[in-house]
Every structure is written in C-alpha cells, then in structure tokens.
Image 1 (tube, rainbow, N blue to C red):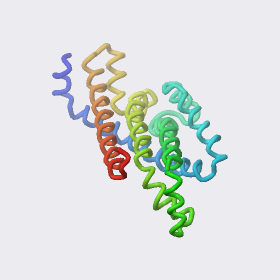
Image 2: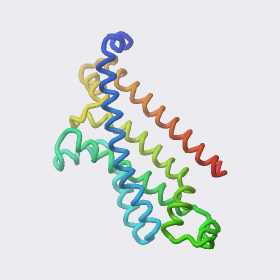
Image 3: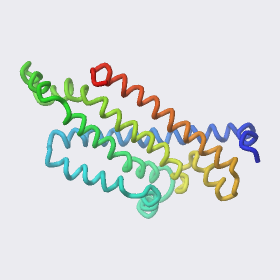
Image 4: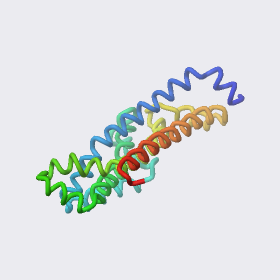
Length: 211
C-alpha cells in the first residue's frame, strides 16, 4: 500500500497514536525533571554526593535502550508503567548532569556579590544561581525530550502503545507504508521538540548575555 494512501485513509488512527506517544514522552520527561533537577542541586550543594549520583545515572545511560526495556519486564511487567520507568531512568543523566554543571559554572564573583548583599545559601541558590544556570539546564532537558520521543517508539514492544505500534507492525508485515506512518511522525516530533527547546535555550542565554 502506498504511504500517502495509507495516511489519507488511516489518519485518525495515526493521530491517536501520535497523541499517545506525546503523552507518554511528556509523562516520562516530567517525572525525570521532578527527580533530576533536585538531584542535580543536591550534587551541587553536597559535593561528595555528586560522584555517587552522577556515576549511577551514567551507568544507567550506558545500558542499551532495548535491554533497559527488557529489564523492566520481569521487574514491573508490561504496559504504561514499565515504559515510563525505563524512559525516566534514561532521561536522568542529561538533566542531573546539566543541572550540576550549570550551577557549578556560575562565576565565583556572582556568588560573592550575592553573599555581599546578605543572601543566605538557599536564597542565593533560588534567586541567583538557578536563574543563571537555566540555559545549561534547558540544554539537558532538550536532550532528555528528544531521547524520550525516540525511546517511546520501542516502548510499544512492552505494550505501552504509541507510534511504535505502527513501526513494528509494519516491520512484521513488511509494509513500508506502516513503517513510515509511524517513523515520520516520530521524526517530526523529535525535530519540533529539539527546535522549540533550542530556541528557548538560546533566548535564555541571550537574555543573560551568554550567547
């Protein structure tokens, strides 16, 4: 079947799977942000912790994507939850690393000026250091989002749904129309996420005179 004919006759199904794919990716990145940013701050505030945490998330990141999903099966089962857990684990490194790096890169004279005006550690972190670290943190978020969109394609192998359903059904039936109907929206979603977050990252950097 021709790709364009398939899209024209099955666009409601493709749209539903795209929406599911976006929802899964956003859930995973949202949870990864809620865990990763505080971990990155913890690594910055308590330096001995950084070696343990950064090494742990680095080890997780080196696990092949398909193997990570495979590990989830005996531990959690199939469906929505193991897919989210796997992508959250995989998304932690860029978020934790960039949060820690962004905070560590704040100029010492800026910290000294904040101390000079009477700011305590918590106030300095919240009002000075975190705003200055935002461009670097957003760079990590951008990587995490693009990774999540790609990884969620494999999540259909463990019953999570999404555009991977079309890709793998197309592979099993040797239908390029099905494969492209799943692959093209994934590529567009990843490119759109990368472009949008990159633009926001550059805007933040320009406002701070970094770029």
